[in-house]
Amino acid sequence: MKNAYSVGQVNRYVKNMFTQDFFLQKIYVKGEVSNCKYHTSGHIYFSLKDETGTMSCVMFAGHRRGLAFSMKGGDKVIVGGSVDVYERDGRYQLYAKEITLEGAGALYERYLALKQELEEMGMFAGEYKQPIPKFIRRLGVVTAPTGAAVQDIRNISYRRNPYLQIILYPALVQGAGAAESIVKGIRMLDGLNVDVIIVGRGGGSIEDLWAFNEEIVARAIFECRTPVISAVGHETDFTIADFVADLRAPTPSAAAELAVNDYRSVVESVSVYRQRMYRAMSTRLDFYRSRLANFSTKFGYLSPEYRLREQRQRLADVESSLQNAMEGKLKENRHRLSLYVERFTGLSPLRKLNQGFSYVADQEKRTLTSVKQVKNGDTIYISVTDGTIEAKVNSIKKEERIHVQG
Image 1 (cartoon, rainbow, N blue to C red):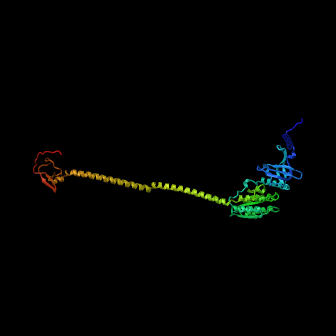
Image 2 (spheres, rainbow, N blue to C red):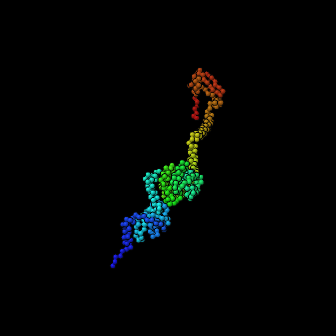
Image 3 (cartoon, rainbow, N blue to C red):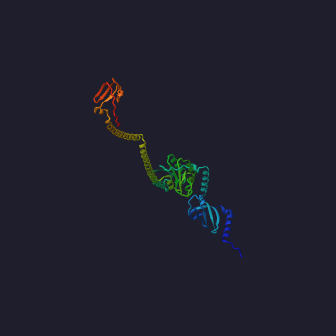
């Protein structure tokens, strides 16, 4: 019985044959593009055909840098890569690593050589990139005076900021003298002190865009004191001007959006900030008013004037209390005095005198209460109600009296 091999074994054997063939590992194939599909993953699937046959091709997303134009069906291209077998389907295909338009191969080689040279000189370095101003008043544009690019820039710029001034330098962007015209426009606008310069044009082939791959244009952009935005071709088109510019825009319309801030959004932002600021200020003022009121109340009873007024009131209260106490004391003492007066009225010498009694004193004004205190010939004084009688003692007569205990 003959040996039978599996499909996978055969496909693997064929793949090994392709892998070992050095000729197939780096090959360039020319033909017409057909069935071109850009996958969401970034891969490009297409076919190459000529009058003799068709070949399946794929360019993975990691090699898209090797594609300097937007490829479409009908393009005449030269594809560089390797031929290998896809084991699952058992078919071979060309794995593309670089694709150039047929007839543009020499230009593309010049493009790559100049790109490498300028990159080694540091002209693409990030430290030389100037920031794009957030708000501009004057926009310089270097492009063709007719065409969709300038109209897109104008429409978008004026829609975003109607007060913007646009200065257009009508440059040649294709053909003989285009590079010199672009350089002249950059230098002239740089001397006019515009805020930003947009340099660009619409899409096209590598030949159409070649003026933006010239070294003099790259040096003019690098030496420009004004920030430069490049807007050359479509999103997939890359030129030397894109790498040396301060900012690369995929299209002229995108360049206008990057250069010109939306006036309405700025006004709305200012309005929002104003309202936020007013609310913050109002809240802050209310807070400080409350603190001021608290301080006023606090200082009201801590101030010297308040303390003096409080002390005056306290002294007035003390004075009033003392006055009331004194009046009460005087009233109490008057009452006690009146009682004493009543009590001692009966003991008053004057009253006794009025009743016919008299008061007798010796020469020393001492009260005589006994006959033993005087002798004959002494002068005595007898006080009666209307005066004093001076008399001499002629005789002394002692009598026994009954003392009544009061």
